[in-house]
Image 1: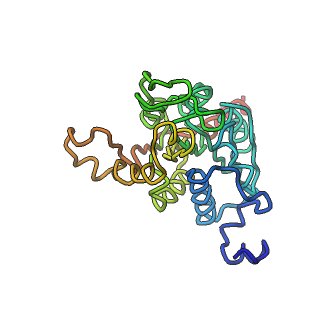
Image 2: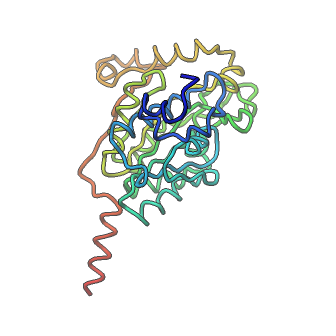
Image 3: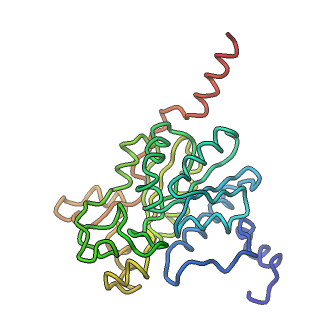
Length: 281
């Protein structure tokens, strides 16, 4: 494959047409799960046969937020925490676009938390993919809103004493009408949930657990195999999760489609109705 030109490579693997191959190789560290998320994302785009000219991928700042730079579509790499503010503007300006926001646990749940909860409250038709590595990976390994209690970070050298967010529960409480969780280990499920999230009319929130072997793994003395074994053993499909007794749920997390409400009207559609109503007066 190394000897193939770009056109031959895309012919062999057509989903690669959604990548800017001239921008590769990517900058993520060895063992980081973010590259897996990107591959799942472009496979989902391909499976849905999305028109690149009608696709917008938006990010803020962070390890996860470099992803749009590799996507061959209408992409925006914006400021820290503001991805959903920009994405909201894009969707309102052109509701025909498929808008996907990729973000991290710091970018979305810390500095971007305000924009996140209000995008969910509005139920605007944006698919939010939160790549959660439990740490600020790009800026040196500081604790984030999802860093587990007791975990080591540069800003918590003796272990974090802060309770961490369950981002799926927060998204649901804020008003997201599609809420899901999976991991980079559960790759086929990841593609499936991205496809379902894009097809859903409303705010779709998908948390993807994506290990950071450098800042989180090293500081907490976790090897790469240990990080991925943890995903394999501690993230339980929702149907099996529902059957577990409470005492066996400790330290484990449900994955799959956790919440889905098709009854709520999407924000852009409500906005268009208001414009139409006012134009008749």
